[in-house]
Length: 459
Image (cartoon, rainbow, N blue to C red; front, side, top):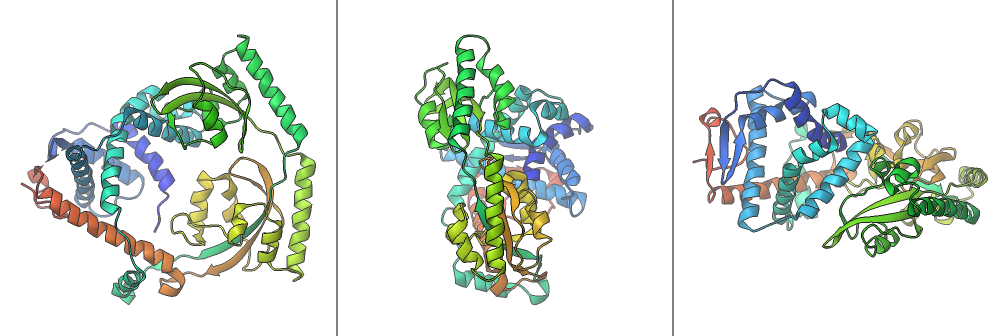
């Protein structure tokens, strides 16, 4: 069963600190050594607390601790290999990754202050605690990518994998949906854009005249909720992270300089350069968005109402209407919503709920789908695009699979992902056996009789 990885990622940041603050301290000792890296009993115990709080601690306490230890052993072996291969990550790369993660976590908590209150630490203290772990994670990811880069599965391997599963052990697949949409994105009027640009120029003028600081104005007026609370600061970022128009201006500013108004797909910005390091910059920005007029939204709703009626009357198919009327990129593939995890078009309710947490265009979609029959077209529904623009859309459930035992015909993409995961595990196993035979790995007697998944060749 798929986990809610967004929440788990959040917990992996939050719970170690919470566990250390609220749990009695264990008598610590070194339980394993991998090259120059050590694993402490407290490392295992803190993760064990996480697992229990997340409901993931299946098995006896010792079995769960052994699984945690093996995961830590794998991490340390990858760190050891990264050092041997001279793999590095820059401080700037680490800071950028931390800034991006923390901005996301702040948005999930609702504010920086709420996150700090939850942890009992300032944002700076949280970053200081996370920095070493973030760098280690990035090194491990590079090593893992090197191991996995040539791992793939052929259609025959997918079939062989499926046939190797005993029929009485085939998992049950929850209902999945193929969902298509027709989206109307009403344009923002020129007048609305001019009004917003003028507001932004007035804000810029007040900053330049010393009436207020850029960061204060960002807190007061910016419509980017992730950065506004930070005074508009975006953190050190390399090329390719922002909209091209934004990036072209940001990388050509001098320290402290404030740009003219810049238009991107997300709205209108003014940008101030804080610092430039090598090929990275740290900027503040203030974002204002031109709103779609109510009249334009009402027109889009009315147009989609007429389109829905044409489809219901049989005057055109959903696919034809999508191609002719949709303003969304999904019209190039018939309006299908894609499952990013599998690459296919099938989405379970859990998939939809997880996507809703990250992407505004999926908000309330699971609720709508649960009330539609296959082939039934929704009324025009208000939505927010990923660019935070108001729009309307029609939704139709193209197909639905009922709860069933996994089979190749209906669940190929799912089985393919299972087969690929197994092959990746095998690749990791071969890599561990090879590298562990050459590395210094010592294990405390407490775990000597434990059953491990990989061949560690303990000394």
